[in-house]
Length: 90
Image (cartoon, rainbow, N blue to C red; front, side, top):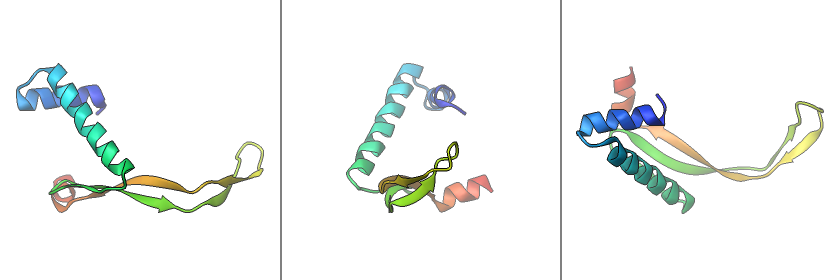
């Protein structure tokens, strides 16, 4: 499912226009992104939690040349599914 299909499903489920569903989805994603950028966790009970972790700097290898390169440390967004989501998938 891509973003446009998700917007269409939201619009049908909530009985709203596709434009309204698109704005709502964009607002939700922007809010989650802003919270993660501030280092906050976003928990949706029953669905899961979005959070960030720190990935340490490490060395890697350029697959084309075989040259060793330095990969900088970075904050990485992650998702931990909730029990209800796990149960719905299984």
